[in-house]
Length: 181
Image 1: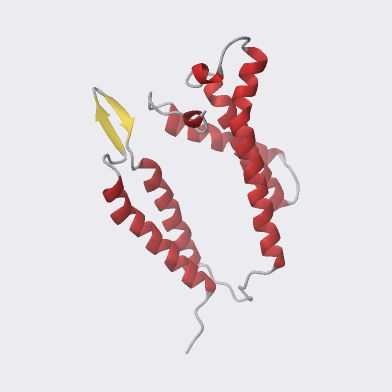
Image 2 (image 1 turned 90 degrees about the vertical axis):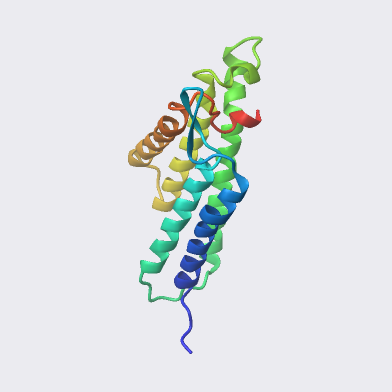
């Protein structure tokens, strides 16, 4: 019997998870679809974020299926170090995302609370922009082995793109971490 490749097993697992999310979990768990029209304006539906996540998982699964690898695919110490570094960069970036907005308000808005300003520009963008850009930039720089202007531009464009897709079209969306602050 032929041994199954790691990419095949992981790719099929990703595809099954993505299909489960789209066809089972989202319909059973959410009341609205991707975008809804309510009172004459478009609002984000409950299923938009999980549907986008499922789409990315599906794409990753398909990419794993078509990738051809001949070397040993078992994870080693270098793989674990890489995953640990990515987790550490993610945690630091999320902490910056969480605390940059409140720190900026404390520094520049004497007497105001961040909670009252979290849905007004520029305050609502500070944490998301700094933490998100730091996350993308630091992960690219780590993978490439050095920071670069290209990594910085990609980070800024990626975060600006997310803001344009999620925040600008919808009046009732709070970018992370503002919904929890």
